[in-house]
Length: 73
Image (cartoon, rainbow, N blue to C red; front, side):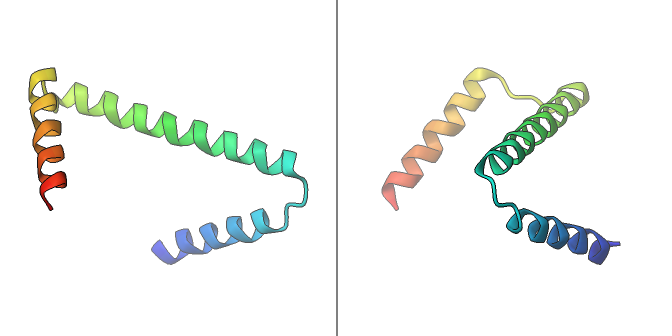
């Protein structure tokens, strides 16, 4: 099944590479962005429903720690 998915991805790449008009590429890019955002929203809604959430303070603290670690490396 994974090879089937990989084959589909390669097929889409091949089809994309054959596009000649910039307008077609822009439309495809917009569609892909919409799909990605929708997928992320669905995943977020699922996490919320499962109770996999953090408070703003927890998130803020994690970001501050991440930034601190990033700048010290």
